[in-house]
Image (cartoon, rainbow, N blue to C red; front, side, top):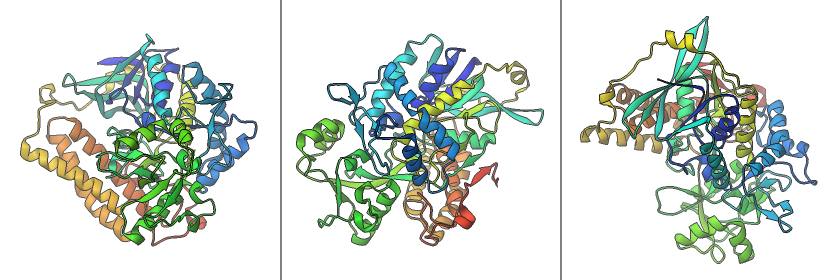
Length: 532
């Protein structure tokens, strides 16, 4: 039994930012299944959207965010997060984050991305996420009040019913390195587990983005919302490697142009802003062109830009494409859409509290209401660091000893942990995961239909059943735990997509192609298999 004042599950920008703040008042445990560099934060190329230029204003940033959200963003949430932006940037600079600058270092260099009316994206070349997480990780590792538990994957939250209130008092985790199950207890548990991109066949997310936070919270009885809104990044490198490589939206912000393989520039057919339209518009436009032509990719071209600008502004993209035999200063980049970000998640209030006492959530795993039906580019890192601050500002040390004494937790025999599945069982596990990913990509992707969604719903029921059977009857392993979480998230996404009978933001259904404000100008919320 491991007891702390605060438990953080996840170690991206949200989790690390929160941990550093609450470490001032109590002992903190960070549980993470990742290697040090694996998180959506590290894969974030673009930057953090914030009002730092005199030409910009909070009102403009708020308006851009609300417009992208297609009527479902919460105005009070957007206002609070946007106004917190400059202070968040200053805090990161104090922690040692080296953002790109101009005028001999006198001011921050600002990029522009789709959906933004001004240049406001603070960045570190095209590896912003990696730079931020490195600085946060350094601070965490030198803080005596924080203990980092790597190679741990959370199985489920520990909850207790008392006085008609459900309390979260920690989590059960598998330590894969030592093949043990550890019980972490804390007065406050923060979910900062990131997204669920691995539920799709093609994703920009790292392998750890399996929707574990959403799945655990839902199983524990927390409300989830807006799960139908999955953002597909329109431009990822088309190549033979197993993982997609993101070509930042900032490339289009600097003047990148999209062409079909036969050389036709097409974005102005779909939106007056052309390549600077919001991500969902660009993703659907590319999807439409690919379906029309039968091609497997389109081209993103920056060859008209100066080679030195490309190499300086996008060094990581330039080097990675070069490794795949593409010199982007001389030839166009083949690109396709891929699952990138989930705008829904565990429903929280303005201080990141869920409807389970003692359970908080922030970052991509949470649904506070910032993004609505579509996330504005580079608002994700802003939301993560700002909401981590909000959560920490209301943090208190809770006495949970009476709750620990009353808990009755189902446990497994430690000697069963880590035993490999029999070969004939392992192939079943791999088959189910492969089927799930293909099912989501083919039926619940960029463009959906009633028929495809119903087909997906019929099959996901069996996959969820199989995943629960593996979890209950087989020895614990990463593969079993992750399949269970992926199946839970997939079922939620499908159910939410079926429920919304219109096309709004990131959710586009060919059988309901119009926005229907009369019936659907509201978010969908689900709790314990019931619509709230």
